[in-house]
Every structure is written in structure tokens, then in C-alpha cells.
Length: 419
Image (cartoon, rainbow, N blue to C red; front, side, top):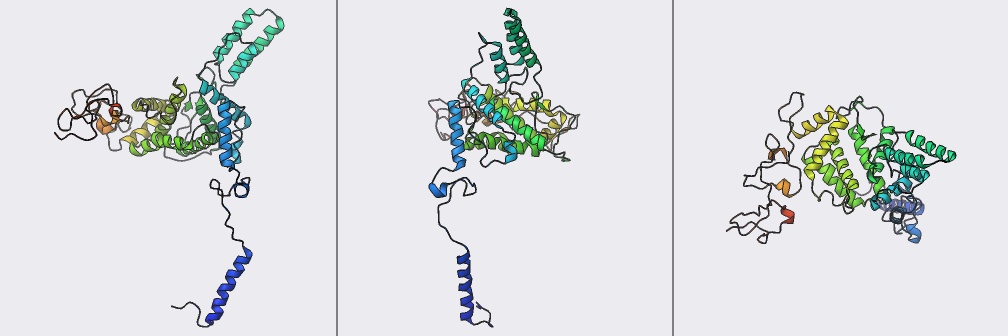
């Protein structure tokens, strides 16, 4: 084995190698200092390596969590680790609104209009606590009882301000619609940023026709698949940085609601997005404060959310939604009169006489098309499929009042009975 050229003495070659090593070591200092485990020294303001202070990535989220919990005015900051172009959308005013909406979401208490002044009513409307019709009605009530000319003019000015409030902006009260919550507001700001930054595209993988009304309520939704993925990523970035949601919980939720349905049921990006938004709406509109991103899927209603997502998708995207979703869920099926591939969705009924119990119903999962009859009826019985020891070999509970996960049958067992 030749280590050095035959024309160079081996001692000379070895000397050259050591010389190169000495040269490198003289130009570069090798440090064995501890590196920040969070940013790995990539954030200039991090002093973890020097004095052991918490990394800004951790400190910011911790401070934001405290601010939201104590009702402090706005989130502390959002700049660390987030591109400047994004922070220009999430300004101090927007972050203050997020903090306010989070506090309102936690309290779940409606705004009491009794004994409120005209200015207080207008401020409540501006903060999304009142719909425009509610604010106008209450201002009119005060106006009727007011005799002073100046006071009447002030009330009339407030009523005019409510009436002239722009309906196209991302106000969290949304005109006369139900006030949106903190997660929807954050989502809409992400959509506003991405849609504003997006350029015209010629993609053919499901870009919506510009002539189709694609409003999310009175606001917009992503128009293309790449827009959707960017909005979703940006939403994840914001809600975790502002401590609205724990990142592990949010990632687990997205896996269950977006990525697994797209992989297992071949949902289009439109269907996945609508399903995601229906769950967000459930969290925000529920009177149960215990419903969160961490448990909303396990609470059940999988088929209900899927059905609602289909209705919303048709409203937002028109025929392009139906075509994309139907092609994805039944590519080898027969086509209907519109040229779309036919598909089946569970119609909330099941086969009472079937001796087999539905696994999808028991586990709160969407019914696969293969498990449905032509009219959408489930082929199986909707009874508990937990193994029991008192019904012979392979016996199951069969109780229709509960599912497998909540079986209270005293004869239930962990394995299939053989006798």
C-alpha cells in the first residue's frame, strides 16, 4: 500500500502532513464549549453558551404563555426565529388582538350590554364582542332615551361608525356573523399574508377558478394546494410561538385531521383543509372549555365533521371541490352525469341485522367506502365490539349504548374467547 509518492521521501511526506495539521490548528481554534440545545448557536441574541441564560426561543414562548394566562396586554414578542416579512403582518396590534381573543375564549362569557355607555358599546363592537346589529340596536336604545343634543350627536356618530365599518377586512366580529375565535383569527391572518404574497399560478392540481366564490364565511380561504400548505405551516408557527397551543399537541392534531385522512382516505387538500377548519370551529364554539386540540378528535363525531367539511367545501370551491375529492376517493368508480367519479359517504344509518360490528364506529373513525352500501348505509351493526367471555367463541358485547373504548360489560375480556 503506497502512502506517499515514490518521488518524495517518506520522512518528507510525513513532515508535510504534520505541517498541514499545525497550519490548520494555528488558523482555527477548536472550542469544546457547550452549545445551546435549542438554537444550536444560530440566534445571535442567545447567550446560553456564555452565561447559561435561557435561549430566546424558550424564553419568548414562556413569556407569551404567562402573558396569555395573566391577561397581559398582548404577546411579549414574535420576532425571534420568525422571518421579518411575517412579523410585518403580525404587528403589535394583531398580537394584542390575539391576546384579547384568547382571554375571551378562556372566559366563554358573553358581553353584557346592560348599563353600558355608547362608547363602551362601540369599543365592544370593535373588539369583536358584539355584532354590528347588536351594537346598532343598543346604541339606538340609548339614543331614544337621550335628550341632550350633544350626547345625541355623539351616539349618532357612533352608529354611523358601526354602519361604515369595512366588511372586507379581517375584523374578528365579521359584520353580523358570529364573532370568530382566536384560532380562526390567526388562521385568517395567515391566509391574508399568503394570499397577498402569492403570485398567479398555472398549476393544474386543483387550483380554484377565480370566478368561484371561495369565502370562508365572509373571508377567504387558500386557493391552491401550495397556498394551503404554506398557510398551515405559518399557522403552526404562530400558534406555537405565541403559546396558544403546545407544538406536540398541534402536530399530533394535524397528523390525525390532515395528513392521515389524506393518506388513508385519499382526501384532496381542499377536503383536508375543510376538515381542519370544522374541528377548529368545534373547539371555538363549544361551551365545554375542556375541548382542546389535544382531545377534540377523541371526543367523537368523526363522520359529522367529515359531512360538514364536504358541505363547506362545496360552498367554498364549487364543482372543483367535488371533482377533486370524488376522484381522490374513488378513482376506479363509475362516473356520474357531471363526469365526477361517484363516491359514498356514511348517511348515519347502519345494518341492524348484521352479526358483525362496525370497527369504524367503535373507534370514532371515518367509514371507508368499502364498508358502505350504495346508499351510504353502513354494512355492519353499530354495537360494541369488545370481546366478552359469556357469549361463546368470539363473542362480542354488542351493546348499542356505548363503544369499544368505553365498554362497561362485566364479562369483557382482553382476548377472543375460544369456548
